[in-house]
Image 1 (cartoon, rainbow, N blue to C red):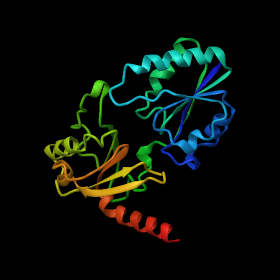
Image 2: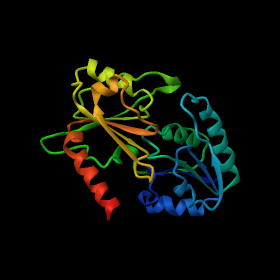
Image 3: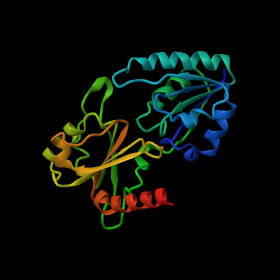
Image 4: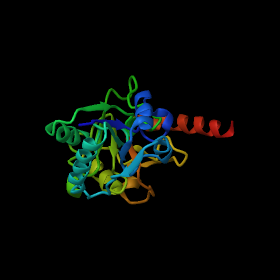
Length: 240
């Protein structure tokens, strides 16, 4: 049996890869990758590239991915399973790890920078936000998440929630958040196609905000405090 590495590809920018991830992508004879892994990261792969990405609602495809991992592990000494962000943050890395170990296949996890950390806005700040929560905007089979346990987090990040942004905003307002509270969407963070959209929760709830997935949905006082500074820095970078 070959060794399988569950590798985090980070949020997009290839310079945010770990050194180990960078080395493995060049060494592996085969890399099974997610749909949203940045093409610049995939460009580092020297071996075979196998796209096993899933669209929303394709949960049944996971069994096929397990079967491919098993087949390639039997054929190659080194296999990389490349997952966007971090393998253990809404990446189903735990399921793949459990499957591989159950079949006697040696595994190693190489963490990556989760997109939850890629907004450029501090998630915690003294006197402003003493903690944060990261929530998935969609459940297995397309279900809607229960936001009640997380609604009052000082900083709330919703991943995979751009398509349901209006429902999420309405639910957060129903659970006590202020409709005038500012929130932030960051599309394709850390890539050349990054786009930032700031709005109130109320405007999002009314369907007045256009966002294209994949996008991070960030809610909290840190948005009002820091997003103008981030925008200024990005403007200076472009001007420079």
